[in-house]
Length: 92
Image 1 (spheres, rainbow, N blue to C red):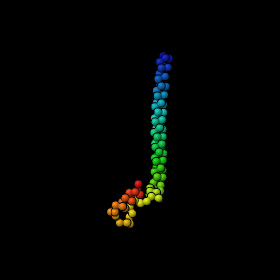
Image 2: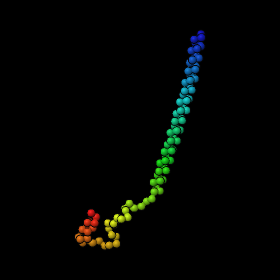
Image 3: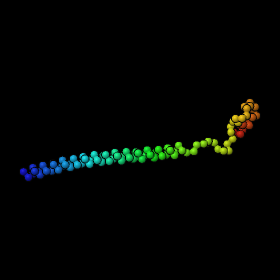
Image 4: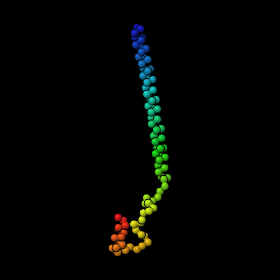
């Protein structure tokens, strides 16, 4: 009779422990999910911050100040071979 009572007590204790472990597992899973969500928000904020920095960067020409223009807009086009050769030589 005492063995049966002890067996019943142990099974009741194990049942309670199992319920507690399941509850702890759910809490741990929820904590991990919340942490992952918060981490994603931080990453998104960092990406947004970098994007804003890039979009507010100064925009301008890539060419240097000393570069000579390839085509003179004000002059009229010429078909003179000497002019073409001079322009080719200056490009080289």
